[in-house]
Length: 159
Image 1 (cartoon, rainbow, N blue to C red):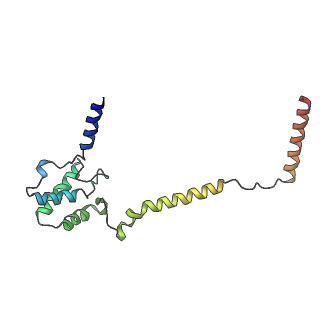
Image 2 (image 1 turned 120 degrees about the vertical axis):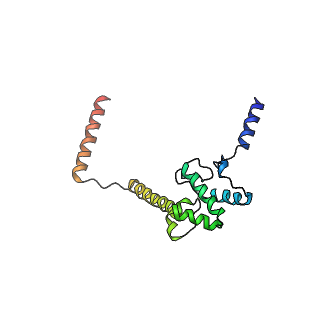
Image 3 (image 1 turned 30 degrees about the vertical axis):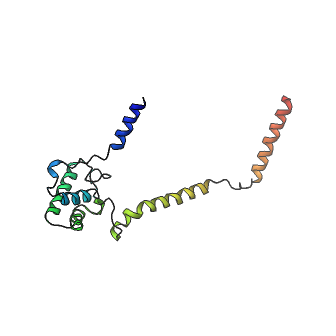
């Protein structure tokens, strides 16, 4: 049994992210391929959304990988190649978009929603918090006295 656990643990430790880059996409120059690989790990698949184009099997991710490699082969710098994809697909395509006026919602939107939800929950809970009860009106006091007298008289008869 321990041998089986050891094998399973070893397999889990050695299992890495499955890269979707196909052999026909790999560049002949290892230095250029390394640049392309590093850049494709930083770009988001717009179909899968939370996967890099390097990890995605989607057809659009493959197209994005090919475009990225074509730009690098054409002599673009990393910034130019990334900028080409950003110009084409928007800042959302970057897994780590830079802090700019047009990406403020990406960076601070979740925080704003969290704070607004907290304020809303606090206001809701404050409205539900037990506080002082409003005083009874004269009619309500008379009705309460009648109910209590009825309850006393019924318990006296039972006992």
